Length: 290
Image 1 (spheres, helix red, strand yellow):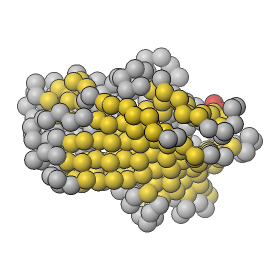
Image 2 (image 1 turned 90 degrees about the vertical axis):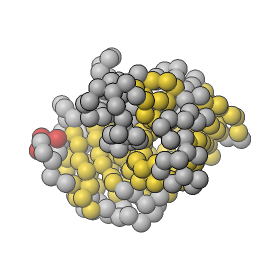
Image 3 (image 1 turned 30 degrees about the vertical axis):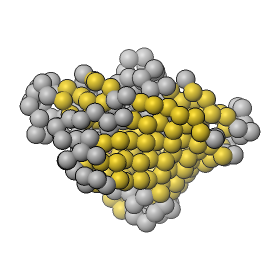
């Protein structure tokens, strides 16, 4: 495990493939805990039940949750690239399922120490014309954490997918309920869900989402109207402790969603990844813990 520390923050980051070695989330910069002023924590696991969920924890990102690169044209037994993870083997004719574990040939990763941070360099492995380099830099300054991404396409195939941070947040491990407020820069509107029970705990008032009660099962909502100007920003507040975390996304969001359970709240801001051969795409996120 790596640690970044200053006078305000302590950030714990999994060494690639050490704690998390699944086929869903990016192995690089997998942030398992953020502690403010030595006592206030912000990160929780995806599930509190060992063995359940897909292994997510804290601030971790995923490429291609619904747009797997090179999967659709691949025969069973072949490999496709999952950015930040490695080459994944397609086992059968079934559609791609992000929750399903796949056999992995991991990408080689080099980790460099830089002033106030770490740089992760993912070395490319050629796969069916796909060849790319991912560079991720995590740095801290006072009570802020910055994540910078750079994806360069060195292959013959264009890369078309999405990326987002899952943000498994539970401030001081306090349960989800009326004490939490999730604030946006705009009045959030949710797309009606196929299962209305997933939105039943959610209460929208002006620019805020709150919770009527502690959810017993998953809650989920996708925004149907949101500001596409950058930066996009959300702030999650726990009112009794007066602690908060906000994320600014320095890109034009493709989609905004919200997932969670009784112990975790996960705002998700998606970016469209469009990188032609020879091109590079760069984007950033900044978190403030207060």
